[in-house]
Amino acid sequence: MRKRTAVRWALTFVVLILLVALISGCSAKTTASKAPTATKRIIYMSAVEYKGSTSVEKEPYPGQPAPPGGGYKLEEPKDGNWTNSTYRWEPGNITVYQGDTVELNIWGVNGKEHPSSIEGYVSTFSVKRGQLTKVSFTADKAGIFAINCTAHVPSMQGQLVVLPR
Ligand SMILES: [Cu+2]
Image 1 (cartoon, rainbow, N blue to C red):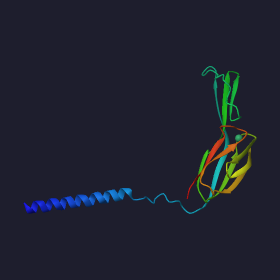
Image 2 (cartoon, rainbow, N blue to C red; image 1 turned 90 degrees about the horizontal axis):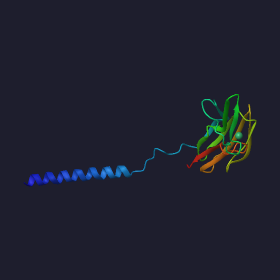
Image 3 (cartoon, helix red, strand yellow; image 1 turned 30 degrees about the vertical axis):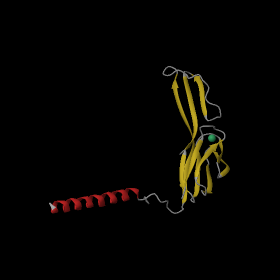
């Protein structure tokens, strides 16, 4: 009888130790997501115009005008075909760490000119068709910042994501 009680106590003790180990293991902070040291990030982007077209035979022309601002275009049918297009940054979102030095290299694929800015970082820059525009800055503030082209609103808005260090 005594032996059995001792075994029971020993088992209870082992279970308690395992529970404590499990709970402390779950609540331990993870260190895997630590930011790497500040670095120079060279990022390549493009100013692009996506286009789509079809025939009125396959799909009726939508009729309503495209939203204003120059970011969207909808052209009335010509010879039975109608087209639509939109301007975008490609990629639209870029991510860096706070403290990184950033060099954006932006190629103008379509659109004569894209007068632009990066909220909180770059007050003005311009991307022209067939030219590479370099935009450099130090990402000293964490947050999400709009990359805006004022000629193609609202679709040509990207986001600079600066992760806190
Ligand atoms: Cu634009």
